[in-house]
Image (tube, rainbow, N blue to C red; front, side, top):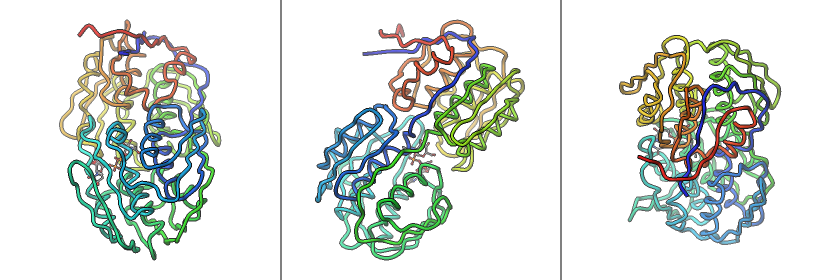
Length: 422
Ligand code: UD1
């Protein structure tokens, strides 16, 4: 069924909102379950489509997966299959994270490549080079990435760039390799720390967790575990941006504010008052936000996944902002949709210059990916009239109960079924 979100701008968000487990964590944790025979249970999982899609990928490898609301049980057989089913994998880019666990467990993996992406090219060269250093041979054959290894041995691996996916795949292969692997220039996103914590509970021996030098002392086997997924910092930060843009007052619960220190600091510069607790924060924005500059970088830099929210905030801020995108080259494509909403925004290569306006004006717009979609809805909250955001399936993949949460905070938003007039 085709659906859109109808957003009428002008409401000031207020109240509180609960954030559940991180999409970018749960999918990797589900893959990590493959590393141990038996039942692994994940709690605080977000109820988004990507979780059942990942469950299908694991089922295609012989696992039994039961989803009971926010709890996911994964029963892994003694000998999981090594070839992921094309139909399951093609729907979910993140499913490439089964590569490392399969190489570790089966010493062989065939994982179809998910294909192009709206935010830019997503090659696997660093994933493959890391696996080669561990002793695997790997190639891309008939649209699938293949890997096989007789023995896996520890190695020193320097990543060209702190890639989240490459760090995860190499880490999950190295935990069952013989000897010590050191991943230098490793990504250190909170979701990687979450994965490390779960692997340690399973019996993995790791050092340097949360740093850019991650050491993995291989073990001969791991045990299944029960683990609670960390709160989604990108969702939590999205609520913070929405509050700042609508001059609201919102308490966001279920996310560690330290995971978004830099984001909250930027919003303070924009005029927000923010108080933080252990797993929550409250943001109050009294005046129109001031323009601030944003530069996306690997963690602890400003997350590329929040760049659309930065553009949306800048579009209604007082002053001119420069936004620099350093992670995904095509991530500014959605800016044309922001321009339809009246944003005064211009992009040139890695940079966008946005001159803030007091108000935007509604239009039909199309979400090209999860975060672009959320950014467009945020812009719609500050637009005169009723904005239609189409292709909301993207937003549903990353934001559980998005419309319900925004409505509860006072936004005028509804999910509407029916074809676009375009
Ligand atoms: C993950 C997140 C995504 C987030 C991104 C960066 C998941 C499911 N997705 O994606 O939401 O935007 O981290 O924080 O967790 N690259 C290469 N070769 C490689 C691997 C990556 O050139 O082998 C490049 C990519 O093209 C990109 C950059 O490295 O320009 C960062 O990619 P990476 O950190 O790997 O992102 P993902 O793990 O795909």
